[in-house]
Amino acid sequence: MSTGQTQRLTEQHLALGGATGIFGEDAQEHQHSVARVSVSIFEELKKEYPRYQFRLRHEISKKEINKKLNLIDKRLGKTLFVQASKIKPDGGIIEVQDKQGKWRVILVSEAKFQGRDVENIKAGRLVGKKKNQDLMVAGNAIERVYKNINEIRNFMLDEYHFPYVVFLPKKRRKALHFRAGM
Image (tube, rainbow, N blue to C red; front, top):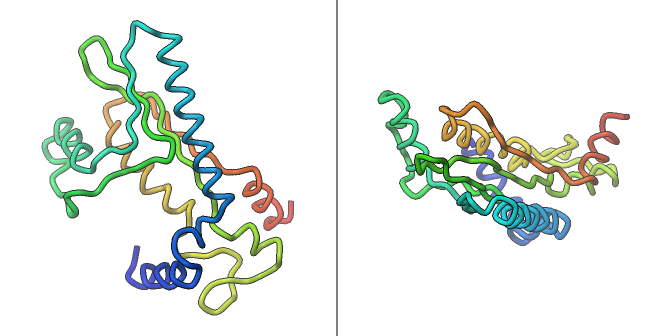
């Protein structure tokens, strides 16, 4: 994210009263529902497959991702700019332990809600610095999820599957269709 984007996002946060202004009730409910479904899946897996060990993690450190990359190839996973940085998918990371004791990712779930774009599109309001765009650029939820997908992909580089699921709310899908004229 560029310095200009960071500044615009900070200004937007302040103007809307912090994170709850950007991530309104609908976005928060969507995020909580994805987290609840993930916990339900985790509990069902433990019940359905009692001979396996499962775990649900709420975050994975960049340090762990880099360590795994380095094990795959010594040229990878060398640089970590922020030592405490983490990936925190909304629904968490469900893993199962294999016969060799290695934890294997079987589900990563994330909820994304495009801020107030849905309300702005329906009301016909333009946004942005010059009030000339349909969608906010700074903090775009769909763009942000790309970073997490890449990080988990790096963590799973030696796997043949990629169980990453992004949930968009029904309202968001309608807004996309409305905007595209469908």
